[in-house]
Picture (cartoon, rainbow, N blue to C red):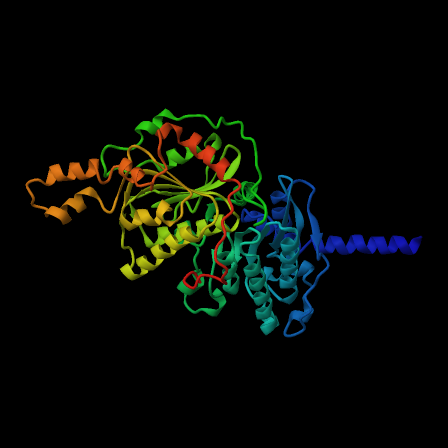
Length: 497
């Protein structure tokens, strides 16, 4: 009896030591910086009392340099599973109080073990990054450890959602983790992203790294002010996406009438062609209860995209927030489209486009735009396009047009669909100094660029009243729910790597 109690007390003592991490002083320091510790982050992410830990007693096994003297509780990363809104999720959280949260052999094995289980169970993986980077004492073993993590992430891509949050340091080789994730969050005041560890650089500028970590860098999808709001937003995102590529996103009755109409949409398109359409208002009018999870809000603002629910069903939405396509905008849209297609999330596009803005070389813009067009053409998820206003030339062709495979295309009466802007078309045909120029422009606009002309050719399925857009999209989503589309067998497209 006494021996059993001794064993039990030993377990309690060992577990307490593990859960203490690097000690109370280091945890207090984190709290003073407005940060949670590794276990607190997991507790706030998951539903109450659902976390089950794996690998609590794992410790590093390196013996070189000063590593033999180090005790590393949980080897600097907490791993396990729990639930978010009742759905299974696997999670890892790096503990910066233990050797700076540095990545070594056993640390990586724990993360890879979580990935292995998540792939078998078909559940999302959430990672909290707060690390000084590679554990130098372990040398090539640490490199191998990172390779194992990246291989696991690559295998999981398109199978289960991968969501990463940068809560502190993301140093050196660790910087590839957010780049390989589907969605990355960052806490603006604490997150630091370095491609090369600052300790290896000379000069003050090299040691600063990318401290701004804004969405403008294109790597981060969500920037939050503090950890509390970051974790709350992560829960919302996980709630709206599927658990894996074989399941639908969870359906929720939102209580919002699918037949709801919004009369203000009938007049939302400005009569002045130089004024932008308020796409945010259009999106919220379509969405259940006006709820819109916008992705990369402050990066490439010419594209507005994110997740909504329509009649309880999850959909991705991509809209032109500017008349022009750009290099960064097409890249942003392609990444989001790729995620939606991988998890069979319906994609709705709101089209108002007819030109380009050359922020980079024309060659680079051609390549990025062609990739977006190929992305839409290859996507087998349900695809709906609503042409709001302008649909000119090959930019219109790229934006999920009927010509490259959209399942259903609607147009508002305000839409114009043509090979080019009527003014440019008349200039080509008659010259800019023609006496009949103004009359020709109006004639071209009424006939050749009218949505009724495109509908007559079958390129538009219906011209709809703007106020009824939500109702029409909801009906089509229901129809497309059982869509099945095969593609030729191949390893992958040669131009998307």
